Image (cartoon, rainbow, N blue to C red):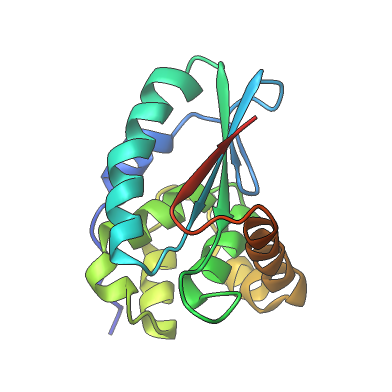
Length: 169
């Protein structure tokens, strides 16, 4: 039968709905301040951090156009990518990376041991009729998607960052 959705679809849409997204970017492209959030979507401490900090940034700074957020993937483990990070980056191809990541983090108990079934359940729970799961699956298997996630990790390493971390520009 159909897979059970993950929790939090409405909460994710309330937080991020109506805000311009392009890939990993949330907010106005011409905002004077950019905040890059380096995080691991499969890390419990990282989830707590993002779920506490990001909603306030979105409501107070991003919605009014003053700040643009970038989600950067910086795994705490040994691999340069995680299954959830690549899945979120693939969702970014359709302008919903922030909703996807939020759903993963709201369900962190399952995300820490994420498998294909979990990331597909998250994809099936992404709010909005315009999200195409089949296209997401193609983007998820595209080597360029994984390369973008690896580039985030490389940038975080170059900057000497551990997740979670924030860079303000």
